[in-house]
Image 1 (spheres, helix red, strand yellow):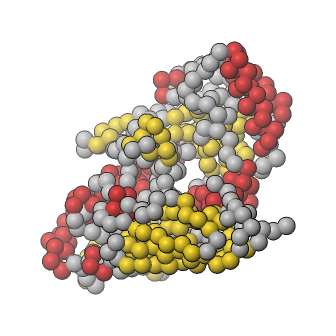
Image 2 (cartoon, helix red, strand yellow):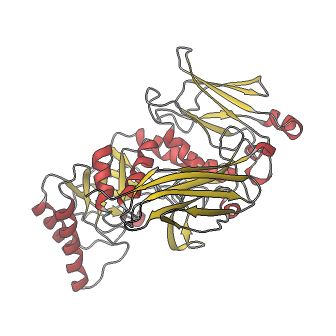
Image 3 (cartoon, one colour):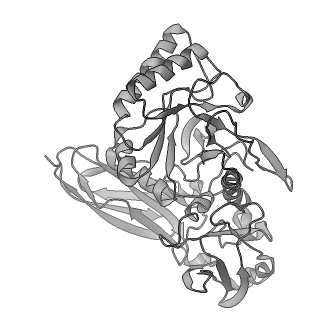
Amino acid sequence: MPPRVQRRDVIILKELGCNIVRCSHYPQHTAFLEACDELGLLVYEEAPGWGYIGDATWQDLVVRDVQQMVLRDRNHPSILLWGVRLNETPNNKNLYTRTQLMAKSLDDSRNTSGAIAGPDYGITDFQQDVFAFNDYYTQLINGTKFPRLKPPRTEWPFVLTEAVGAISGPSRTYRRFDPVFDQQAQSVAHGMVHSQAAADPRYCGVVSWCGFDYPSAAGTDGVKYPGVVNEFRVPKLGAAMYAAQINPKQRIVIEPAFYWYFNGTQSVSTLGSQALIWSNADKLELFIAEKHFATLSPSTDLFGNLSYPPFIADFTAAIIDANTSLPDLRIDSYAASGQKLGSRLFSSNTSTDRFSMSVDDEILFADGADSTRVMFQVVDNYGVPRPSLYGYVQFQLTGPARIIGDNPFPIGATGGVGAIWIRTQLGLTGNVTVVGTHSSLGSVGKNISVLASPS
C-alpha cells in the first residue's frame, strides 16, 4: 500500500490511544515510520524472522538484515527499540552476540531486545539490553480462559511484547459475527493484561497481540483474527478498552462492548448481568425508552489499575421489554464534579438500520499508486455499528481510478462491515464517484478528486 494508506494505520493506532507499536516481525515501510515520527508513535522495530534459526550462511544474512535495518531507520526519532533477536527463537549466543554488536556499532543510542517465547522465560544467557516476553499464560474465571501474567524478570528491564492474541484470551477468533460474549471478552482480556502490568512498576510497557487482523496460512479462511481492529481497519468491540484510556480532556469516550441488539448470539441478552461499557467518565446514567434504568460506577474488580476501568450493566430486567417494544438505549456520562460530559444513543429497532459508507481521503494524486479506503457497514438509526449476517454490496465507479477489493462484496459474510480501496491511474486526473449499493439497504455515493502528482 502507498504512503497515504501506511499513514492511515498510524492514525488508527493513535485514535485508540496507543503510544507504541511493535513492527512484528519485520521492518515496516518507511512511510509508516515517517508517520510515526510525525504523529508521535514510538516504534519497536524488528529484523525479519520467527521461530527458526538456520545454518551459518543463514545466520550471516540475519546479521546483514540487522545492519540494513539500523542503517535505514536509525534517523527516525520514533524508533525506541531494535529487535535484533528474532521473534521466539531459541537462544544462540554466537548469533545474538553478533547482532548485538552490529546494532551497537551503528547506533549506540538505543537499546536492543528480542521477543522470548513462554518456554524460554527462565533463560539466563541473554545477550540483549531489554528482556521482551510474549506472555500467553492463563487462568480460568467462571470456566472461561483469561490472561494471567508471569512476574517480570528482574535481571533486565522487562517489557511485555505479546499477550491475549488467539491463545490466552477466551476465543481464537474475534469477528463481528462471532458470539458477542467472545467479542466483549476480548476487551476484558486486554484490559486485564494492562491492569495486571500496571500493578507492577517493573513492567516497562505492554504491547498486546495484536493491532490488526492479518493474512496467515494458519488462520481461519486464510486470516488470523486476534486484532482489536479488523482487516478492513475498523475497530472491534475489543478496541473499546484502548479507546477509553484516553484523557477525557482530549475526547469523551462511551463505547459499549456489546450491540444494542436482541437476536441470536450477538444479542446483549446473552451477556446477562455482565454487559460492559468502556468510558473515561466517572459515572454513567443509563436510560431505556427515555426512562432512567441504572446509575453505574467504574468496576475495579479486574481492572483496578487501569486509568479508566469499564462499567458493568445488568440488562436482564430490560430484555423482557425489549422483545416487544424495541426501545432505545441512552448513555449519559458525567465527571466526578457532576458535569455532564457526553451522551450516546443506540437503537434496537433493526427496521431503521441503514447502509453507511465513508472515504478516508477526498483528494488523491494521479501517480498510479495513491489510494484511499472506502469503509462501509450496516449501522442503526444513530450511526452505531450493527452486526448483520445478510446481504452484499455492489460498487460502481466512474472516473480515473479502479477498485481494489471484492466487487460485489459479501458484507453478510463479514458481519456487516467491510472496505475496498480506490487506486488512481498514472497521469489520469479528474473526478471519481464510487456508489455502493447494499442488496436491501439502498445506495450511498462518495466523490474523490484526483489531481496531478506534485512535481
